[in-house]
Image (cartoon, rainbow, N blue to C red; front, side, top):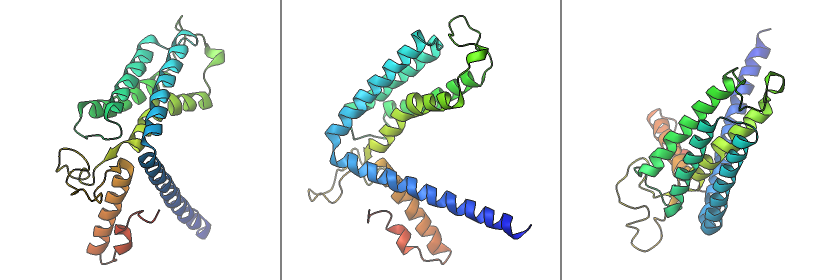
Amino acid sequence: MWVLPLVGYVGLGLGFCFLTLAIASGLYYLSELVEEHTVIAKKLLTRLIFIVMGVQILLCFVDGFPFTLSMLSIVSHVVYLGNMRKFPIVKLSDPLFVSSCVLVLINHWVWFKHFSSSDFSSPRNRYDYSNLPTFTEIASYFGLCVWLVPFSLFVSLSAGDNVLPTMGSEAPGMGDGGDGKNKRQGMIKVLVDTILGWIGEVSKMAGWGGSRSERGFSSL
């Protein structure tokens, strides 16, 4: 067969594009919700951080998770909590924000290495070779205890129109002249609009137009 595999590759590519577009649209909508309900979002995120920290403590003392890795995760969430002091405004050069980005990568690596290891025979571990964590349990742990809070912060934090791709002002939303036209925007919205703007510029250079791409998701 020659045609059917080609159809399969085309379908896979289109499916990936539609999935990416759907995720971007959903994140864009969530970012707008946070902009409209900042106080509620801050309360929910703060409680979420404390809940995840409590789950980490339970996993450490009840299920025998490594104490060092659990403490690393707890300290990481304390750092994430520091980003709430000026919520939802964030400066990309803020040491807390930079540290949060680094800690996300470190936590992912150390926990992935832990679950990839076959050495679960530590006396502190309550599970043995006959009761290893399933893929669903591991994926749920990563989703809820490693990625959920950083991802929620990334969606919720706001940046000024001039923050991405350049940082020309001290604080987001400054210099709008009081007319409200240059209000702060969610990082997701700025990122998506910036990427679409770049795509529009490349399309223009290639002679494909690109006026629609420059509009971003403003109609949402």
